[in-house]
Image 1 (spheres, rainbow, N blue to C red):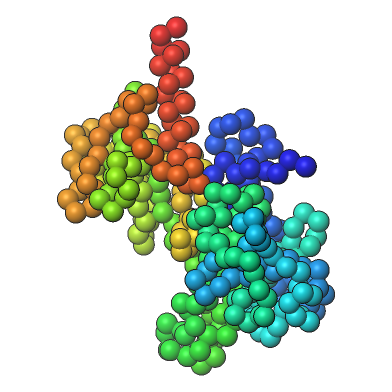
Image 2: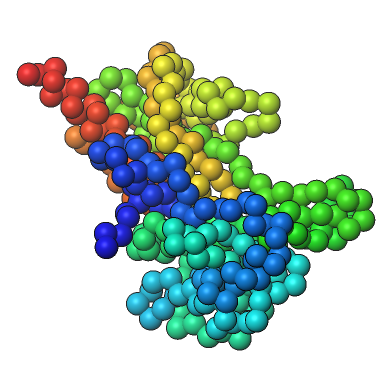
Length: 310
Ligand SMILES: [Zn+2]
């Protein structure tokens, strides 16, 4: 069986993917929302379900070869446990259940524990996607144990997807922070910049978090102007990627330079410049949509240049 490889981490390639940016609109799992309110159904799934075990640092149990080790429910306990003990992640293509559980609640011994960034580079898309989902939820649960409105304890329900304040009744949901990421070109070159905290000589595209009251396009234009001082136009959507470090969604675009000279933002951007597509600096890891975006733009620009020469 061909294991689907992700075009970048946590996302499956579409069956019709031609090497471009096409990605599958179906998730790693069917999240089966209707089962979250059905504790009897979740209990029935448990015995043969796969359970992603996470340690306190958010690392997953892995076998001796470094691949995902997700034991069956019956190897761990009689059932998914009390309210919110195990989180229901969804159903795989064979209808099998997937759960996530804090390893500290079990006696299970794993040969090793692997962090999400390492797993993302070597695990198949399904396994890495499931791990990413489990990790993001664990992070949310750990930081929303008390109600932000009244300080009361938050009790989880719906298979771990809803928190309700015991005191004031306010509902709390897992959150995702949208961030835009953008490749700017001037027709023949790509704009890349770097932060001083990055590995030496590594450059990437501009990225930034969406602020309240802002559209994705407004955020993109603002971030580019803030970070490198130029104005852009012709904003086109590229693809998106869950980025659970700890709970972002990267929404990628391409756009054109419109006006202005590069002026790196002091204290934020150490250096930024236009790069010829055949003379690129060190680039981000292949697990990131940033890399996919750069590779796709390089291909597009190089193709247009070849066509122009023909
Ligand atoms: Zn409350």
